[in-house]
Amino acid sequence: MTAILNRIKTALGPDMAGPGFALIAVLIVFSLASPQFLSRATFGSVAFQLPELGLLTLAMLLPVLTGGLNLAITFTANIAGLTTAWVLQQHGGADAGPFAFFLGALLGIGVGALSGVVMGLVIAYTRAHPILVSLSMMIFLRGLGEFLTRGGDVSGFPAFLQPLGHGSILGFPVPLMVLIGCVLIWHLLLTRMKLGFNTYMIGSNIEAARYSGVNTRKTLVLVYTLSGAMCAIAGIIMLARFNSVRVGHGESYLLITVLACFLGGVNPFGGFGRVIPVFVALVVLQLLASGLNLMGANQHLATAVWGILLITVMILRFAAGQFTFLKRKKG
Image (cartoon, rainbow, N blue to C red; front, side, top):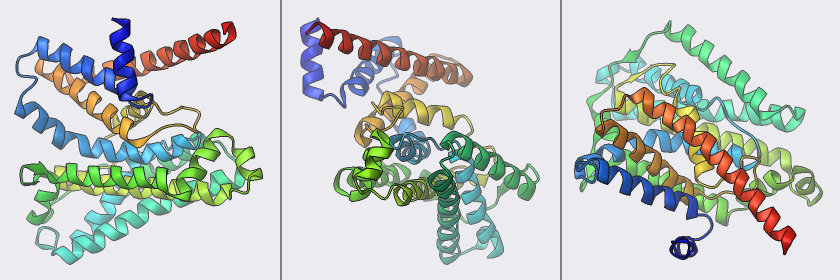
């Protein structure tokens, strides 16, 4: 059995081993537990539910790779969605045209990027901890959103937005196409561009990166700016999917984005991680939720399972690190 596991690990590679094993385990367990699990309906449901969570996870990924965190991702997404909704309402609401949506989307992405710029500047120039900075931004955006909407929903958007949230092209969900496109962009950014290399350098050792000639301040600002822009894209997809915007929508996604990063092999202290394994980890988590739903479990139980899984992943990673250390010491 150990030999088989080692062969699978070698075939998948070190980055994909964890998410790959988790995917195989989820598929086997739930296919045995429910005959409806391996069905077109299940995978269709996953394909439409995955994009908003996936985009927010990509927004979380870059800050985590620098050794930071962005706790404001969901509220940044909602504020960007509110900005887009406001522009649409100013141009007729349900009767607004494509140009109004294009303008609203641009402004929404700009608002998301601006929140990232502010966080990046504070983190880079004051050296304040990213958790404190992003927590402050989260509180600010939540309060601002509640003030602007008075705690209610904003709805009533043009019908042409429906395909962006629910449509398919040749049987392929449009939101999933957006997610895959963003995954490829993030993959190229981290593997082919200077910003990606600098991001890993900062996550490994920010002082060493600074002495190596990396402009750490500029890199951190860019990282959080891109994170905010990706949050905005997620907010626009959520607007189209739910045909409404609410400040507190998707609060539970914050935990899951962190879990997906760690399950995908990202080092919680920064410096190591890849996009594709994180994407596979997202699929695993969504399949896990769908499997529990088929078994009649409450959605809140799925959230609890995700929390237990996060703790388990951290314990297993610690145990693996200790095992490797002892093995090297004996060698």
